[in-house]
Image 1 (cartoon, rainbow, N blue to C red):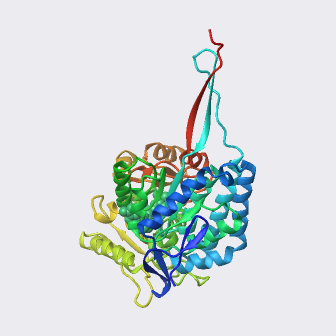
Image 2 (image 1 turned 120 degrees about the horizontal axis):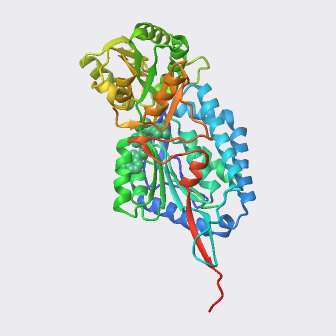
Image 3 (image 1 turned 120 degrees about the vertical axis):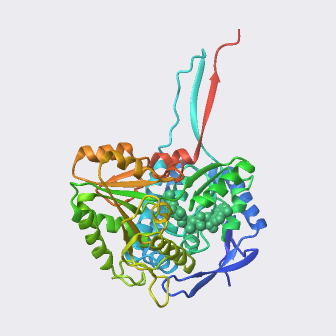
Length: 480
Ligand code: NAD
């Protein structure tokens, strides 16, 4: 039997055909997943609309809403190992990553935003109109569609669900059809935590289900993480329907600059982590390496050695450092881009193809001698594929690093504070990391410039994303 949908507090059969979700380490089917029909999507949106103003949710004192989020965080902790194993099975990521990044990260997000619930404030404002009190209120934006990708399904859902609930919204979740299982399990925990019926709804299925939500007039805000191509479709659907508010976390092609004075060993260690975490299936992964010409050879040799030493294997094996790619389709996409890199004349230093046998494993791959116009330097690959080029001077470099449609993250490796600040200032990206891998944190804003997205998640910026600011004018002048 296929997995079910969660609508208005009930588990319900999906109206559409089911889709199998596979274990990327073996290629075997784990479970059949139901596909929502348009009627199912309409029912989920209607349930979310009703719940928005129901006394059980709207009337809940903030301190009690916070308690529900703390309880959900505790339930995630209680099911930590089970959720980590499920994420690894469905997504492929090494179990250590599932534990520390995905499951712990999700619980921490709910706890952090539980703390916000009782601290969301308005302002009073000194308007010029006489005898008038002016104040602002933060109100929930309404019904939110949360559409998530397959790279960190549980954690990215937490990035959206925690602030949405903290601010009193209701949601319809649409996880990726490739990795829906931890989202389904999280919704079971939402129910166990006692979050009222209709506040959290779940519809599963492929992009067609996501499209139904993006064009739905009953959705007030859609928070999406995924590819830039689908981000454009969602934007067009929003424009053609009700101009719903959008938060878009899209693709990336992060530059990593290794300055002449960098500690190359530290840069190699940090860049290995920053480029191969989750097999490079990370939107902020470092993929375009600009190395000062004087350090290029040393960097290439040491990175190639580091990549070659990574242990590939199933995520469930505790010693695995690099798991499989998420699907056969994605492995073929990565491989096609690697072939293009070779065809366009980049020097393949290590890796360059999939592993034989079951599962969707791909050898970590390093290209040197890459030029700025090559496809592997321009397109998001979303796999363990690194492209190295060199530079001669700071002045040319900022323009080259910015020569991309993306602007999610960037990194600089230097011990010179002036160099660090010159790049932190000049690079057009939502996050610039100095001497460290691209690690998000719930207290710091996350989001992109340019085609990497709109808006910011995390911290107080997420509170903004999920609230409307209402302006209230109260005239108390006596009638003449
Ligand atoms: P994807 O765009 O294929 O799918 C993401 C989600 O969108 C899935 O749930 C999918 O079913 C849904 N979808 C597909 N077509 C749709 C449509 N027409 N309308 C509405 N929804 C639709 O992305 P993916 O392959 O799952 O994820 C990888 C991408 O996500 C990469 O580009 C990566 O950079 C990006 N990403 C970005 C961030 C960030 O924070 N900026 C984080 C993680 C991943």
